[in-house]
Picture 1: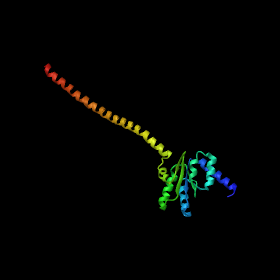
Picture 2: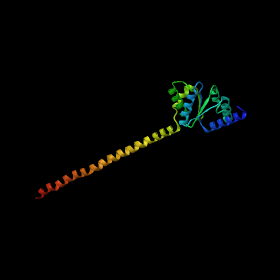
Picture 3: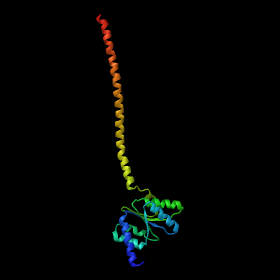
Picture 4: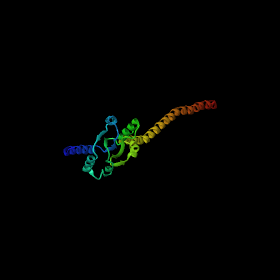
Length: 194
């Protein structure tokens, strides 16, 4: 690689790191060409960008952006490295897990993940990353929690209205019952006047 090509590669990586808040660093070593193609296809279908790059170029790109912010990632930059960039914090983890299940293997290995401002190191973090709630999932849960009390209030009002309607219907029957003795009262009074 010429110095100009290295500079260009670093600029492309910097652009990707700036564009996405989430990226995964994986080891795709020992995967066949067909497996890598399948992994790329899965990434493409889920709007995850996959890039293979040299570790030194990745490190230079990260250092030029913010050395302190990404310092914890540098230990993961060894071996064959494929980067997965995504708007979703968990989609790459879902892809990796599904790929492993389909291929009945343990590759690709998760070396690290950068989610928002947090760093997850090691392959044992894959399950945790797969279960992360996305922003939309969290918003949905909050809306559900907010709707729950409102639904209870509406149900109580509806129940009260239904009971109020039953009381209103019972009132004419009660009025009729009170009118009947009053109608009988003049009949008993009449014989007393004779």
